[in-house]
Image 1 (cartoon, helix red, strand yellow):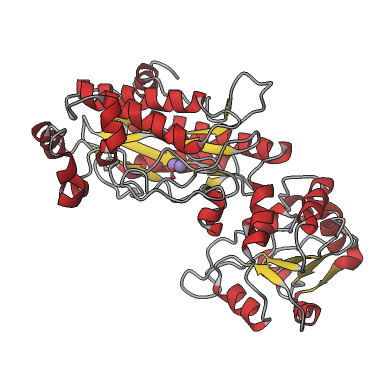
Image 2 (cartoon, rainbow, N blue to C red):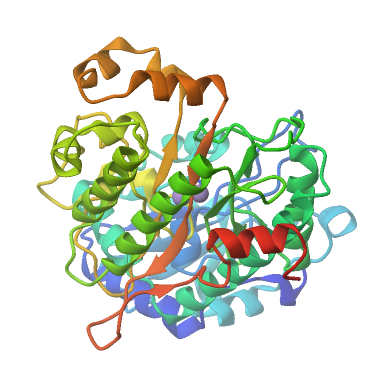
Amino acid sequence: MSDLELHLTSPAAAYQQRRAALAKNITRPMVIFSGHALARSYASNPHMFRAESCYLYFGGPPLEHAALMIEPGSDGQSGCTWFRTPPGPDDPLWLGPTPSDTTCATAIGIDASQIKDYDTLESATAGGNVSCITPPHPETLAHACKLKLNKPTEEESLAIINLRLIKDEHELSAMRYAAKAGVAAHFAAMRAARSSNSETDVQAALVAELARYNCRESFSSICTIRGEVLHGECAGRNLAKGSLVLVDAGAEEPGCYTSDMTRTYPVDGIWTSVQRHLYETVLRAEQSAIKACLPGKRYLEIHRLASQIICEGLVEAELLKGEPADLADRGAYGLFFPHGVGHLLGMGVHDLEDFGDLAGYAKGRSRPERFGDCFLRLDRDLAPGMVVTIEPGIYLVPSIWERDALVKPFADVVNRSAVDALLRDEFGGIRIEEDVAVCGESFSGPEVLTAGLPNDPDVVSAIIDGTIV
Ligand code: GLY
Ligand code: MN
Ligand code: MN
């Protein structure tokens, strides 16, 4: 790795500020580990290394087997130590040069004297009451265990979550770049759809474009005509004319900030009437939900707003019967829209999800139990600087319609023969997903980071058939 390849997102002063802000809210030292590359099959054939997100957030240079220690009351500079594993004699031969200590110290805003060998972490923490953040990497976990470091308390976790929830300008600009790369990749996928024979051809176009932006996939891309499998993967299925292809993919830029976006379209760009109607319903739900992403708005209410619009569209399509508001109150949308309207976005595509619902749910709130709401990953009041996804959908999921416990309570309001007809036709699923940054009161609304990617059904068709290049 050359000096130019540290890929830090923020200037040193921003890292200092973040560490100082954390240091105010902790009462014992905290060690944050970078982790290590996981072996694919044997140690010298590893997956790509991706440093732990908190470690990166507080300024850790992206090197394996390293850790930041932040002491209570630190000003973000003194009282912060970076422990790193010095390169072995053969490392330059196989891996190239490592950035110098001086380069790293300057970039993250500590004095070079505060850089220590990773081996000395043991003596630095010996006998002390120290908490730690670890990625789920076996060697790192074993190391933290051997050092007898403590899991963070709820207060310590919240001290980090409350900082990371609100993205600063440096983070937002990295996320705008990830969104721009994601937009380009989705354009490439749309353009490839018509001439492609298989899901893999579409995915290949997408991944190639991400690489041109020096980005990786932010998660295993979903590129499939079986869009009703919510986290299904590309399986190389044939793109039969008339089927809907669902592409849910995003970019992870070099500093590890992400985008996460979904488009759904007929492989040949020609919508059937039911496809178009349900697509327009999802689009209406999405647009209303995005408009509602304002400071102070409770995210659960945005989920409910999208769910109500989906019920309206399902009644118009004669899949459900009754008053949309009553259907929404009863949760009938869960049969078609089971997954929740979105989640936090940042360095993770489900940002902060490693902290569980402590991150996604505000104090005093917990996950609803009802099917259709129980997979909702977020219920906080929105605030400027938060970035969330908005991603409603409508799916015909065979495994849902086989579950009596889910279906029977709605027997009186479901038009089962219409549902069965779509299941027989392997309708699949529709999702549309944007990344939305909440702005302050002085802005006219949220910033849609992914706005560069059309979602109007006619424009999407024109991109697929080449009318719009
Ligand atoms: N990419 C998975 C999701 O949209 O949450
Ligand atoms: Mn997604
Ligand atoms: Mn998402």
